[in-house]
Structures are given as C-alpha cells and as structure tokens.
Image (cartoon, rainbow, N blue to C red; front, top):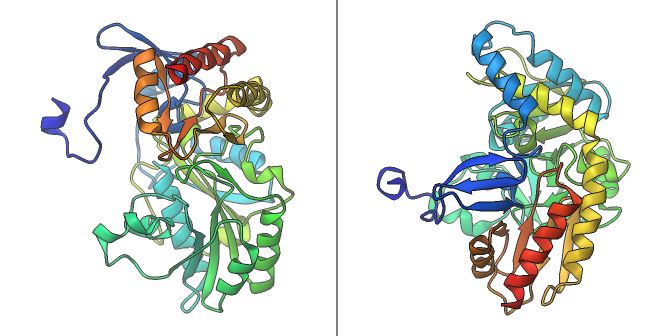
Length: 383
C-alpha cells in the first residue's frame, strides 16, 4: 500500500511497526524488536512514555490550536526551560515543527542580523542541516545538491574541523558560521578538541554569528544538555528538534536576545509552531528529562555501549559521544546489509554511512537493554 500511494522519497519499507513501549517495537505480525535508533534520535524517552502520552491526551481535550496571532500558556514555559538549559546568556526562542525549519529560521535570522552584503553562511563538508532549499545548500554534501540546482545563493563549505580553512573562508560578506558539534548524517564525526573555541574566536574577530545545529545532538544525547557544552563555548544561535517532542513534531531556534531582536513582526512565521499540543508534549518531555538526569544517563549508558561495541569483531572504530554512536565496520563492509540482518534478528539500527552503523537508543535505555543489543549485534556480525 505505502509504495503505491506515497511519493517514492524513501526506499520501500521492509517492516510496518504498529506499537511501541519504551525501547521495544512490535510489527504488524506481532514480532518484537529492540529499538536502538529511536526514530533517528527522536523518541528520546522511549516509545509511548506514559507522562508524555498523558500530557498529549489531556491537552487534546483542552485546546489544540489557536495560531500565533494569540498566546497560549504552554509555549512560553517551554521556552523558558530551554533558555535555561542552553545556558548561554539571556535568549529568545522561535518554535517550529522540525529541525529543517529551525535551521531555516536561523539562516533567515543571520541574514536579517547581518544585513545586505553580509548574507553568506559558511558550513562544513559532510554536514547535514535539512531538506528545504536553503538548508539543503547549507548541507555540505554536493551530491545531494545536483538534482535541485540552482539552489539559493550565499553558502560556502569548508573542511570539517579545519580552523585554517574556516579562517580563509571568512570574507567580509560572511554573516554566520553554521556547524554541527557531531556530524550526525555525515557518519557520527565529533569536532576535534579545541575546534569550537577557535571557531568562536574567529567569529568574534570577524563579527560573524556562530550557529550550532543541535537538532540531533541536543537535549542530553551526548552526555550534556547540548553538545557544544562539552567545550566552554557560548554560541549565538542554537537549533534543536528531534528529542524535544519524543515523537510530537516540534523544533526550536534559540538566539541570544540581542541577535533575536533583529527580527520584527512579519519577518518570520509558522502556522503550527509552538501550538498547545506540541508544546504540551515538549513540556512533559523536559520535565522527565530533568528529573531523570538524561545527560548523566546518556553518558553512563553510552560508555557501556561504546565499550561493548569496541570488543566486537569486525568493528574497527567506535565514534561519538554519549548515546549517539557509530560502529565502523571497516572499508570492506556493507553497513546496509548488516543493518538489514540486524533488523531480521530483532535489533533496529541503521547504516549512517556505507561502512558504519548508527546506534541512538532511548536516553532511558537500561544496562540490560544495552547488553541485549550488544548480544544481538554480536550474533549478526559473527554470522
């Protein structure tokens, strides 16, 4: 059915999931799976978390939507919590529905802040920032650009982690630098130590904004609330989405107050952004995250998972921080085939590159579930 009625933007699905609970999924034939992908890092508290489910159900009976022509009580509360967790000085937020939209907001804000003549944004090769035309061009993967040329102008790419290359690219027309702290879709590659501090110095020197894309890494996944907090750096703009709604579509763009004030009414908008239903989900998610100390949990379970992966043959490298990890299988491996075999064995992971698997389980994953996933993966790799 799906291959007949849906546009062919994804390969034909091999499994149809109908139910989830915690780190478990069940398909339409009743088979159980251990989910170590979390909907690409989205179901941060696991499937059908009871507090999030209740918050959504209760809000659906109270108020679903009023548009941003009017206020609701929940959005500002969520914004205040996120501003506190970003912890980079007083800021303001714009709510939207996805990570691409959060990055689109950041790009428009950078252009408005820089003004005419300072519209260029520098990002890194290997990055991924979204599928809108602007965020696609910000994405440093030229092969993804070709089918959609001509793309919006004003984007430049440099080698990831190369401060000298970045410095050379910061001409007077550059208004912002856009970076991931860990390149997620690019293969789970963290920035080199000290690189973010050097980028911050260069941005300050040249008067450019530092935009950090935390869509995949934000809200506890790497062992800190935000990945940039592993280094003593304060960005000007931070984008987030995936984990914020635990499956409810919500994203956000945070900016330092003096940067956010570049926007005026009418400069940017969204019909559904920050509406009560999604905001209620986010409020419940953040409440659980803080109570459960998900950064601490991600750090501890991440060490256990990384150590276990490092003992499996033929894994040659484990990359990433916290519970966002890549298992590199070597140059002769076919990661897509291994991910497919893992699915048949009851473990959900995906090929983040031709030779590497991505593992991003729930931030509430248990030690027992980590050990179970390692055992399943060991059987697949042995076979």
